Length: 631
Figure 1 (cartoon, helix red, strand yellow):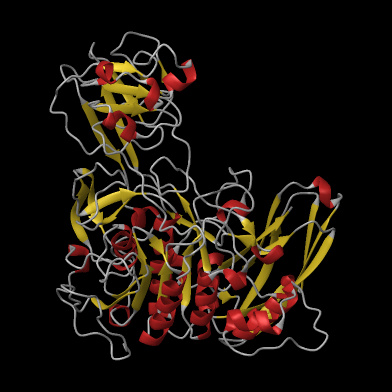
Figure 2 (cartoon, rainbow, N blue to C red; figure 1 turned 30 degrees about the horizontal axis):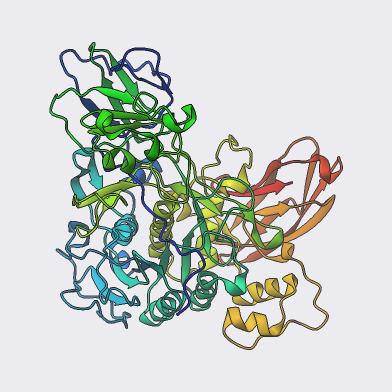
């Protein structure tokens, strides 16, 4: 069977060694001295006397608290218990406390699915359905850990005092802990099958899930007709189901988003306030603080002291200085390393030190990769959304996320790792995606009749705007940082129907045959159709390589029956944004009003590298923000 092009359940990367740090290394003193980056002035972290070990502290907020979504937010418990979150992933570990059904009643009457989890797999009133599509593993159990992590992030129970070997101890919970979970295992350690992903979508739709969370995708951007996730999400949209999808971990440069279909929710990842602080206590009792990156260390050295040796000091004389400092295995002399902590620089992985019998490793400046690795601080990725749109759509927490894990899976991807954990800390857009899936489910508990595009609009237009620190701005982080509490009362929404998306496909130039591959039914474009991508009723606006473009948008009033909204525009001096009309007056709920946004430049398009603007409609209570990107 065909497999997804460059398949990936975005791989995990955390050290298996006793010591793992990320920072900038300078060997400026004797063997026991290592300088790990710029030492922050933290008054509550003072040098410790008489302790020669690796210490670890956490400055943190739980990721949901960080976005203002605390345990006591307004909820609709009866409706929430009827919401079903489907996850297409690597399965689930049903014995986890995050998936206990204590206090749950029977599944919702609308549920039409089955529990086909294979041998020794039992569903309950929390995990109400399970299916698998893998050849190498004939059950829905998670042997990777990834699926359990995403499921508990989206919809897991509240579990107190969860931690990774005592690190980051606190609460682990999903956005909608009263909701039900349906699991569709399309991936195993060997990858994800395209036919399995499509079958998972079809079954999830038939089973009656409300939201789909898909934390997987191709490493490269595919055409819509080749992208099984985009195709499956289109079918889900046809049945009123919103799909959230991880944008990928290759960004934030342009043209690096794997998820570009506008009918699904493409999610970028950001840091939170959680910082894992490591302290290196040296032989002379000097304590150095490591706060750059994330040095997650699950080992206790119990006060023991080990000698430190650099790759350069342990190398064969025939190697180059660069190869030695980078700890290229063929350059190193095992007898010099055994029992010591090995100090390596770029392009090194912990297994090199482990294979040479080192006690541990200090690694510096590990570069960002495709995996869900702790070093990534911001992983939003970007691509033009069908030629003229910005992707990803939104940003959510995705770094150092503590969530449930499978006890069949080691906490790292290292083959030598034989440990077992109930909760793990990993990072990536795979972790931000279920935050948005859970937030979408939360919005749906208050508005069960809203369309997928209305839920998406509510979340996009109520974001916390992000500082444009990224050179790619909205093309890197989308509309902004997710704000679920505000999203349940957005005031206005930009709605779009299946017909709108079909017209979009026509505007791209797709034939009826190609459209059928995506939509699954015969659809033809209107005669002499001359619509453009700009016509899609989308909650963001992007103008690319144009002097002037007009955008027609329609908003639906979901706030107060009698209300008046006024437009406010913010833009650089060389970008002109005109809105007509500038006032929208509504007399009833669900009333629709249209307006035209004209974006023009005072300078030639080629002189604009990237410009950010915004349009905000406000009635004094609600602020409905639409990002505008020009490049």
